[in-house]
Image (cartoon, rainbow, N blue to C red; front, side, top):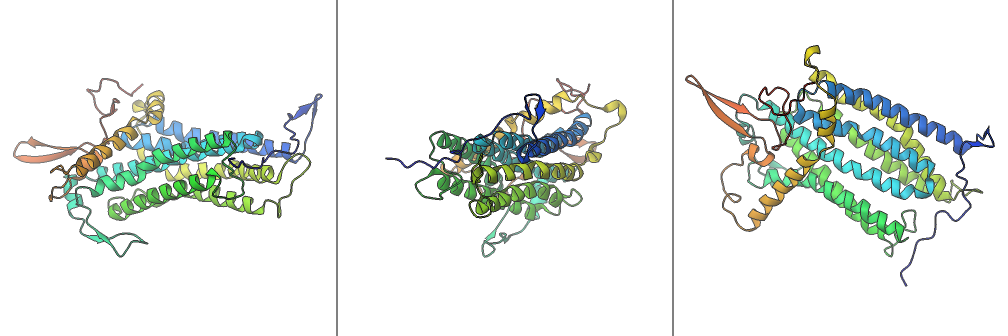
Length: 396
């Protein structure tokens, strides 16, 4: 017989509303409701200011579509955490959905860095920027090995190392939800090989470790091109959210049954989960302010008569066709590589534009040869607000 997890909700649960018989019933749990709800609303308002600022000044769609996706992280975490606090018996389902958005954020950050690097290549050949990169050591802990960034497969490998998380993290969340339905996930313990949580966490740990290593590798390779764009501040505003939510969840789980005791209405696991959700709601207020500073709209300010409509940027940010395009392009390259296609095994230096979808073309201007760089990552069906010939203008 397949073992099942002990229930986290065996004790009678009080989930009544604030109002009972027309009277307010304030206790610790309802005070928590008010704090969590108030912080979630404040986080949404702060993030809305930042998001709408970018939407009204949508002057670089290729960069700002990724920034908008990153700015959604605090409100997504805050709102989901509020619901997981309110409906604590379903906490596991909410937490699995919440962490899935982390994959989107990290992938959007990589594509944003790629756009920053491409932007520095304006007026010159992006390939030359990479050709200057010589053989170097991998970051810790693999610093004993060296790599050559101009190899044909290198750029695709770096990109895929991060984008794979967009596949595995949601897949782990879906698998976790299914396991929770059949009571074999056992997220709150016991930590055993007989329950699914051990294996799902192992997959998630390996996947996010590869993704973060890929980001670190790309930053180390292109940090000269990223000067002035505050990449570390942008990255820390994301990574600190991940670190805070992970470590405080670990701490609260460790306190279950020791410091945190069951009460008349809630088990120790209910209380630990509720404290974690409440803490996330409070923290997201500060992280939304940090992201507003790190991803400031001042870099993209448009003239008053050039303000853009908010609807196309919002749609642009939730249309993930660029992720599909990038993942599909990497799959195609590695498939051809395993078949031994000559183009993928060529000894020539890798074209940065080919690997990351940053196309370049040369045009003649009298006797001068100029190089124009397109900073699009992929052929999206959206318009560039600076392109007068665009079929679907973003300008209002």
